[in-house]
Length: 431
Ligand SMILES: CC(=O)SCCNC(=O)CCNC(=O)[C@H](O)C(C)(C)COP(=O)(O)OP(=O)(O)OC[C@H]1O[C@@H](n2cnc3c(N)ncnc32)[C@H](O)[C@@H]1OP(=O)(O)O
Image (cartoon, rainbow, N blue to C red; front, top):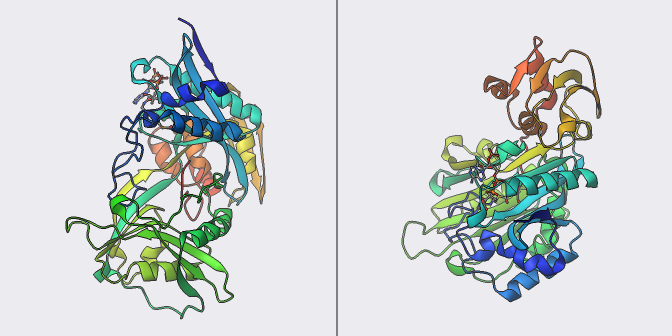
């Protein structure tokens, strides 16, 4: 038996896609009520095996895409496993955009699982990402038990919440000098990239959009979900500074009737944010608003007369992070509190250059991270450091759970002060 783990050739791309559950029409990894799918429409959208035309179309698009790095497993010439890294950018603490490998589209055919093929593909993707100069990798995990062993750990979270209209009163505030407008898909396609570019510059964890990110927005009805509607906010100078996509799904039964589903909402300032939500949470002929894929620290809660009215109905991890090149990644972010720490990593089997004691020193926007022979303040697992990197998890909790061992007094407190991020890291869409 000959096993090869390598990028597929152009003429092997159709076979590559066939290794993926979604291309096979097999039950995919997204549960029907996945947090970011606000509506009742079943998932996945691909319910029958992709035909030759579809496979050809995917292959043609992906081959042209220089940011797409597929990897495959072949056994005796047959493609049995597939994955890909996308060269993306993510906003890191301090507002810089760092290059990262977004691992996606991973599958091993059902008859060939648990033979180590994913592990080999992952190693190949890590090595290639390091060669491209991408110091971290991120992914969204189909199952929570798979990716920790490769060093990934949750970095961003998302919630789904509901708000009953009769409880949705906003606290009074100054009148809005801007305006709201319902726009069509073509206008929404123009507005989204502008709004998102500003949002992502200030929100840790946000991603640069994939090419064609908003091309699919349409005014057409989408099954039982009803068409997407688009609401924009303009400031007093007429510039679009916020946008929301929402649906009013039609329901054959009364259980979901009158539910307005907010699928996305981004704004560059609190006035636009408040105005968009103000209209959506008090929409005539609705009883409830459901919003999915929202940050854990949604500021709307603090704008309500009754903050308890917003009920979180689901909370899941979103992107998982994995530092590939620890010193480079740590010097590419900045630290809210100046200081220094010496820490030891000893458990990175896939990127062994990370295993040593490092001296991190942060002063203002500049940080250095160099090897040291001095005694470490703490020992930390690679996955715990990867979670901490974006600043959305507690160093105390990681230490409590045994992922960090302090060797000097105050080391965990120093880690907390140096790594925290406010607001929490969040990403509004995946890849
Ligand atoms: C980022 C994304 O794309 S998420 C989408 C992931 N894809 C899916 O969930 C589709 C359905 N599942 C699959 O195709 C496969 O089971 C995969 C891709 C998840 C795993 O592929 P495999 O080749 O079976 O994994 P591999 O044999 O390399 O396993 C590596 C390790 O992960 C473990 N593992 C693999 N899958 C799972 C799982 N579903 N649950 C728990 N552990 C798992 C293995 O036991 C092994 O552990 P070990 O290193 O301690 O021995």
